[in-house]
Each structure stands twice: as structure tokens, then as C-alpha cells.
Length: 265
Image (cartoon, rainbow, N blue to C red; front, top):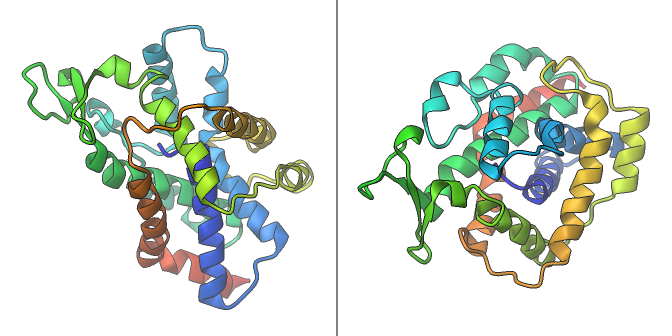
């Protein structure tokens, strides 16, 4: 999964891209709907905010929940990396796209995660079995090889908060320094409280968007307090390139969803 900040910045880029494509200015309400919808798939993590097990056990519980919220095909549960099935979401909620921009925001989150897994992960690391041969099967994976420095992690260490998740926190801090970042928490929270209504997505509770924004703010503050900003797994250049490619790739693949929304307005 991409970090909260990556999801938010990609969402902002997508809004700007849409405005440029259609020579229009999205209303504040439309932007809020899209950006809040873009947060919602990760609201399931709040269920495990006070989880008392090990980091690996925490990850397993979160991944189980994401089968539903991130529309993962259960067949892929045998693999090290499980990514969203976009067709599952489209087949269930395709008719909602033309009524509510939060649906497009939710879908854009799933698309971002899928592309993050399929593009950035293979550029950064690979899973190895006990004989140090590459494997995609979760039950066979024992190590993770980081390409940038050839360091080997044990799988449980890699998924620990000192492994890839520490990189996510550092990634947030680096991106905040690179981008013209402005997250208007107050505006989003007010809109969420007064106007944000679930159009029919049963996998998440839209009432949790307030706590999601609060948690995002905490992640941002945590990242800004870091003393070391050295990424262990990812490359900042790869992340920035990924974010730029993502918007254009999404348009190439799903322009018809955006065009239909504007046609039905």
C-alpha cells in the first residue's frame, strides 16, 4: 500500500489533472468528495489501532480486513503481495461513479495501491525462499532482498515497523519537503461532518472519515519529527516518478469514468 501522504498528494495531482483536461475548476465540494473518498479504503486500519499482538500478527489482521475494503481476490492470498481487483469494484459499484465523486476517489485509491505494488515494489525489492531464490508465494518466502543496497531482511523484520513501514514514515517527510503540500484538515473535517454521505459502498463506514483525518494528521506530525531521513527500501526519485506516471496512467485506463461523470453533471 502507498502511504497516507502519497495517496493524498496523488489525489491532489489527479484533481489538478482533471481541471486541466476539462478546462474547468472543480468546486470545493467536488474536491472534498474526491479527496475524502480517496482516504476511505484505509479507514479499516482504525479497527486495529490498539492491537496488542506482534507487528507480523497486526499485519496479518489488517490484510484480512483489506480483502473486503481493498477488493482483493481471495485467490491471491497465497502470494506475498496482494493487490486490489479493480474489476471487482467496477462490477459492484460501476453505476455509482456517475453520481458521486467520492466513488471515483475510492477507486483511485485502489488503483494507486495496485500500481504501487506492481510498479514500485518490483523496482525496490524481491522475496526469496530459504535457498535465496526469488519466489512470489507467501509460504515459501523467508527473506526480502533490497535492491538499493543488497541488504537481506527476514520477512517478519521487513514487515516490522522498523522495516518498510519506517520507510513509509520517512517517505511522508521527504515528500512534504519536495511538494507544495497543503492539507486543509479543518475544511475536510467540516465538510465530512456536515455533507459526506456514503453513496452505497458497504465495505467501509463513511462516519469513520473523521478519525481517519485525525490519524493522517498524526502520521504527518510523526514524520516531521524524524531526525534521519534515509530511506532503506525505496528511492525518492522512484517515488516521485511513480506519482507523476500514476495520474497519466489512470487517465489512459479509466478516462471514460471521469468523462461520464462530467457528461452526467
